[in-house]
Length: 324
Image (cartoon, rainbow, N blue to C red; front, side):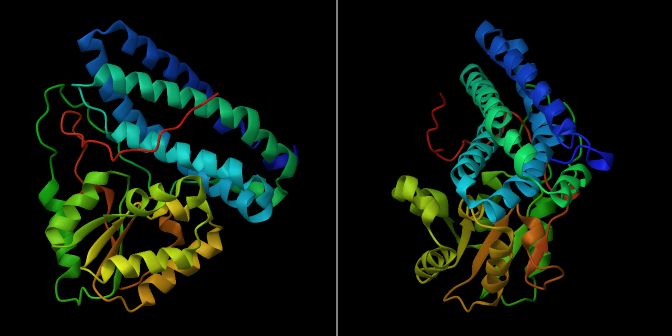
């Protein structure tokens, strides 16, 4: 690894964030263990802000500047990248599903997963960067900026009510599709992962919600990662033959594919003639979608509702992960 000039210690920022992750994970588990409701309620709010302000940009940083080139240039390390990608998805699901009613369990699980995941990357992922990455790839790590820089959430009250601002983003969604033929494939870019956004979008557009990860990938178990994007297309076509759909959690398969393959598939998705409308929510791999395409609805962060801790959706039944 080059260690001079602007690429000196390219992992410095990620390593600093990892140190913060480990300290925060220990604090979260300690608070969960106390059972003190007031302290746990404050911690749930802190985790929600941490997810938006720090964790999501950190996950994007790793996904786009480390996991991508590892899968593309060093396919022998794909199993590790797949494991890390799955854990990223699990972290997103856990934090979005936190509620005050189950705070002790939610915080304990999130802290455990965050700590185990961080240690895995420290021990196995970062050494590969030091050993294998080119000067250009190291420069990409240093210069990375998240595709969406999230706003700082206001600290919600522990008894906060329903999510605010629902009508604003749904109205923006309707305005995008107004006067357009919904038939065919469309992509909606969300600034962050929240399963409830897909559900609300399906209801507003009067489409069925199709959870690709739960309904297709989960049945295949460990073999799911070997699915081709042609098989993804076939699964979407089969489901869309029944009715128009919002295809949720497609990124669970996209995350294990090379960047160019993802970009090619997203373009072909928009050009495919589907039997009924197919709307594809994209959160993580927005930069792979075609730019300035008429069938892409880009929802800016300010149009999305701020997360209310008490109104957090129940998580989709996540895959069970076990750590050494």
